[in-house]
Amino acid sequence: MVYFTLMLPFDRLRAALCDRGRRERAVAAVLAVYAVIWTFYDILARGSEDIHFDMAEMAAWSRDLALGSDKHPQMGAWIAGLWFLVFPYRDWAFYLLANALAAFSLWIAWRLSEHRLNDNKRVAGLASLMLVPFFNFFAWKYNANTILIPLWAVTTFLFFRSLETRSPAMAALAGLAAAAAMMGKYWSIFLLAGLGIAALVSPHRRAYFRSSAPWITVLVGALAIAPHIYWLLTHEFAPINYAVKGHPAKVFSIALKDAVLYVGGFAAYIALPLLLLFAFARPKFSALYDTIWPQDRTRRFVAVAFWTPILLPIPVALLNDTRLAAIWTMSALALAPIVFLSSPKIRISAAAAGQILAISFIFSLSALAIAPARALRVHEERALNSGDEYKPLAHAVDKQWRRTSDASLAVIASNGIFANGVSFYLRDRPIVLSLNRIKRTPWVDEPRLLQQGVALVCPADKPACIEAIDAIARGRAGVLREERAISRHYRGTASRVKHYLIITIPPEPKGG
Image (cartoon, rainbow, N blue to C red; front, top):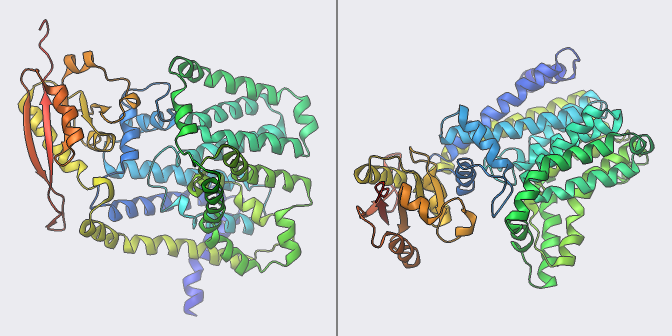
């Protein structure tokens, strides 16, 4: 009796998600609650630390928008910039953006499954994705990898619609989405390759390639990315060089080992939902074979579109002695429910769909319950990469700058991690100069420093960094130099003290 009472709300929710008149409102409500739960999880679990420096880097890039950077193309920075035109520069707002994008990606996966899965399978597929760490525990870190999750989902959805309808409008939107994915990260080339190969095995291939749709997609995509191509030509292909040279394996054996870990890691990330589906569906061997290599051409097309972007990087990496990381597969799961559930030999009952839905929500609420314990543990053990010091260090920099100049602080300079991390919490929203990788912040040069002034920050135990900021400050007028003791207070206790040198240099007087 207790079990049936506890399951009643989830049975009703499953019924709403299966009802044609209510399901879109129901799925919107489910995903909104999901995003809110995981936003609160991040707020509570990370209350003893500041945002990740990757997130701060995106926010810093958004303040000096360009068509590219030395590290990545700029779509993530553009989205963050638009977000912070509306929302304040606060940790919770950044976590909300990241989780809203994860929920949006789940909604696209839901839309992709329409007409490809029956109602109970759609519910089970969505609930299963809600158990994958890419959509919850990993979603919080807004960076070039997580931004690809919604971009790949949207590109796949629009490409499928274009292939099926041959609509010029859909073809144009697919081209824009493809360009946006490439502007998120060049890893998206594997998505585009996968969709192109899938089109060749599609039952619609003849009608598609005889229509104007593929050519409209290519033309619109090329026009959309053309400004970035021009930027690359005028900036020595900097982000492409970073992408190609950023993960060298040095020897083939390392590349091979990473390839094995890449496959194993991907399997581990999706293991929990797959085990649940297996437990509830209890498929026979023939059903598993039909899932791996579907006999139906339409389902085979979807399988090729799903597996190619995941597996194609392996031979490419081995041929180029390049390292792979399983976390890079996070963007490739929008089609997973269709691939693993669409076989007619796999059956998901209404009861099973409701139970999987219940498990996904219990999973999320359980994570929320233990979130404060994680924050306390991080405070006691100290956050990685000095991640608990950015905000108090920013307060110290702000205070010192007000004593140095009446002008707004325009530039913050330090090693990349500190410069980006501190910049997010500075009230004037300065741009960043990375002292250890100056090429990654080409928007700051010597004339700009002279004209606008700068705050320079280094850990007191990093002599190379201190030497760099001393060289910038040497011979300048009005320089204020102080060493500050920084610690983080959380629940009435302070973390270990760390010392930082802060040098503030006021703007040079006009005509000086």
